[in-house]
Image (cartoon, rainbow, N blue to C red; front, top):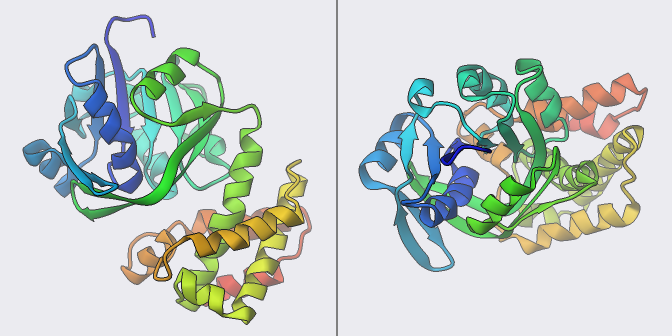
Length: 303
């Protein structure tokens, strides 16, 4: 980042994108760091006309970024691109905005997957410097352009091509962001919770609280976590029995009525992240000769 003006694009201004984008746009208003919200449709129109309404910890703020656009020409080359879209959108979004990415663009991923780098490289074999990451937060869209931070600390962990100037810029912009050497381990530990819980709540149509109260479902949950544990070991990641216990206990920290985004997408008949949270586990396990009877049962209920 050698130019005087630094351009940071956040793609997908939903729950996560709004949570990440709001503090950056607020902090860097009227500075040489330009914050660009990349979105379209009703979200773009709402933010262009009325700003982003961001609700967190009992406070509401209306925030205007430097630019709200879905036009690659208008956006131009980005120094940093933060991907906060759903996993299934990564490939198409990168194809659409490839002219905004050059060899020096830092691409930061915040999806609930363990293979974001592979997904990106299928579309952009060489462009951009990839930092894989994850975020611990519950943040929802109340309506287009209105984001509500529900809970969670908002901690971001990233790994890969470390760029200290980017980290400093994002931290100064209000993000709780940390570069770690072992990002794959952190990604798999989050995946150990997110993928099984999303799968089982969607398959059996239960909330987090209902899952916790059903001993039979909790036993199935533990078994699908064990199947992920076996898959992780083939990727040189050691997920312990204590990690499984911790993941199960995490359910109690959410409101009883909580639902996974996968379940909500199924209920609303939207495109879902099933290929990344269910199919990926079954297909990769099969390649390693790992049997996944519990994941297969879940999958049969989702077909």
